[in-house]
Amino acid sequence: MTGPEDIGTLVDRLGQVALECRAMIVEAHQAIKDLRQATREAEQLVATLVAPMLEERVDAEVRAGLEAYKETLRQAIDSATASVYDRFDTLANVMMGKGDAGDFEAAARRKLASRAKVPNGREAVP
Picture 1 (cartoon, helix red, strand yellow):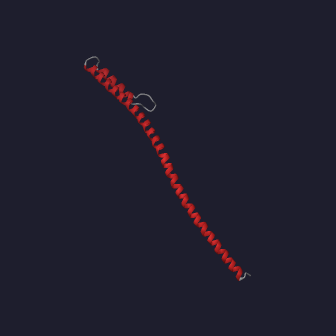
Picture 2: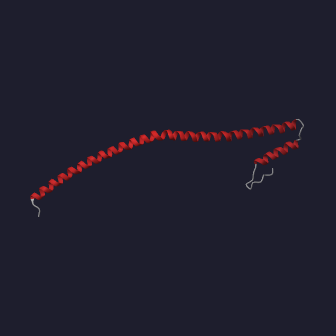
Picture 3: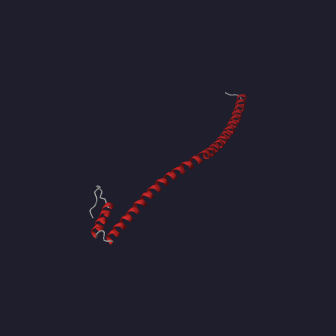
């Protein structure tokens, strides 16, 4: 059996352990607070360093995309312009008597055939 002195010693020891635990808890809370502050600072640093690099990369990608779009648009405009000139030239030749209606019809058929493609790659016959 334990005596009253042993119980007193045990209570004192438990009190000391409780105080040590409280001190460790306070220290842990302070460490958590310090870690949160360090995390905020790291996030701000990353944002400060990455934002300009990200902006530069996005700008470069947008510029490249616009250049590709501009080239594709230029080709489409040139093709459409050539097509319009060809049609007017054909009409002008028919109107001026340099060609006959058959030439105009043949040109129209060729144009339609060049647009209409069947899945096997052959031209459709109008």
